[in-house]
Length: 607
Ligand code: GLN
Picture 1 (tube, rainbow, N blue to C red):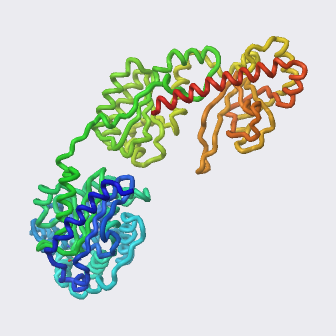
Picture 2 (picture 1 turned 135 degrees about the vertical axis):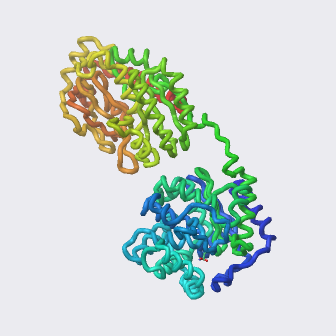
C-alpha cells in the first residue's frame, strides 16, 4: 500500500511535469545527451527509508554536488584551521565558474564555486593524485552506500573543453593554494564531477549529512560529526551560488546543485532530499529542482528557521522499580525491603536526538523527583544521538546527584558511537563517567543491590532447604525423607550448570549458597540474561511439568552449592509419601501464578 508521502510525491511529480523552462547545460558537450523530460524526486528518512517517484534510478553525473562532500573530506584530512587558510567560507554572490579569489591571498571565497572546489580537491589526503582519487571515490561511495563509477565520456568531454577551469587551476597554483601539480588535481576534479549517481543515491548522501555523517542504512560513518555542521553551513550560504540568498530566504535548507541536473537539500536530523531534472536556469540550477524544494519546504514545514521543538519529547515514560523490578527475586528480609523501597528507583526513558533543550527538561524532571529517589536509570534505547553540550549537562547533574548519594546510571546504549562519544568526551578529568548496563534488568538489579546494601550480605548465608518456596508446607519428617533422596552439586564462577536446548535430565536444583544467572540464547549468538537467582531459590523445576528440553541456560555467577532432586527419585519418594509430590506441584502452580502476574505488570509498565 502506498503511503501518503508517496501520494504527495506523485502529485508533485505530476505538477512539475508541465514545467518545461530552462536549458540543458551545453558547455560540457556530453551533457546535452540528457533527456530534458527526466524528473526524479527522492526523500530519505533518518531510519534509511527512501520514498521515490519518477526517474529516481536514472544515472547522471553528480557535478558540483560532489563539492560539499569533497570539502568534508579535506576538512577531515587537514583540519578546519588549515583549510581556512586555503579556502574561505564567504558567499561570493557570483556564478559557479567565477574567479572569485581573495584579492591579497588568492584564496577562493568558498568551496562551492569551482575555484574553491578545485583547491579543495587538491587538498584531500593522499601522497599521489591517484591516492587522492581513491580517497575521493571511496568516500563518495560511503556517502552513497555502495560503490560508484565514473561516466568516462562526460569526464573526457569536460576535460577536453574545460579551459576556464584550467585557467582557474593555474591561478590557484600562482597563489600557492594548490600545492601539487595543478593539472593533475584538475583531472581529479573533472573525474569527481563525472561520478555517476541516481536521484535516490543523492538523497542517501543528503540523508547521511542530515544524520550527523552516518549513512542511515549502512550505519557507516562517512564524515566526522564535527565537520557536518561546517559542510552544511557552506551549503546554506553558498550552495546555490548567486541564488543562495533567495534560496535561504524562501526554502531555508542547506542545498547544493549540479549542472547535471541534480539538487540535494538537507533537513538536519530529519530528511535527505534529492531532485533530478536536467533543465537549468541561467544560474545553472535545476529549474524543477528548485521548484520541488520550494513545495517540499512549504508543504512539510522544512524551513530551518521555522522549526519549533517541544523539549518534552526528549522524555518518554517514567516508571519506578516497583512498577518493574529486576527478575531476580531475593529471599527473606531483602524481599520485603525491596517491596518497601523499590519505588525509590526511577527509570527515565529518553527519546530522539538529545540536545540542550531536551536534556534541560529531563534534568528538571530528575531534580523534581530527587527527594523521592535513590537511583536513576536513564534508558537510552530510543536515543538516536546526543549533542556534546547535552552530554556535558547530563554529566554535571550525575555528579551533583552522586555527591548527594543518588547514583545515575545508563542502560541500553548498545555500543552506539553517537551516544558513547559525547558521553566519553564529557567525562574527561579523572571522571569515569556513567555506569552503563546492557539492559534495564541489569541496571535495576544494580540499583536494588544498592537499596539492599544496608541490610548485610544476605547472599552469602546458606538458606536451609526448608525455606525453599517449592517446599512450603512440608513437615519436618517429609523434609528429612526428601533430603535422603537428594544429592549435593557444587559449581564455581562461570560454570555452565544447564544448557539451553539440552535434553532435560529431570534434575531440580535448590540453591543453598551462591548466585546463578538464567540466560536465553539470542539469534545473534549472544545471550540475554532473564534473571538471577540466589539462596533459597530453585531452577529446573519446569521438568516437573514434563518439559523435556531446557529452554534456558544456567551459569554460576560465583561459588554455588545446590541440593538436587531427580524426578525419578521424586516418583520413588511419592510411592512412600504421595503428599510430597502433591505439595510440590501445588507450590509450583502458585509460583507460576506469581511469575505470570509479575510479567503482566512489566508489560503494563512498558506499554
Ligand atoms: N564540472 C562542472 C564545472 O566545473 C561542475 C559545475 C556545476 O555543476 N555547477 O563546470
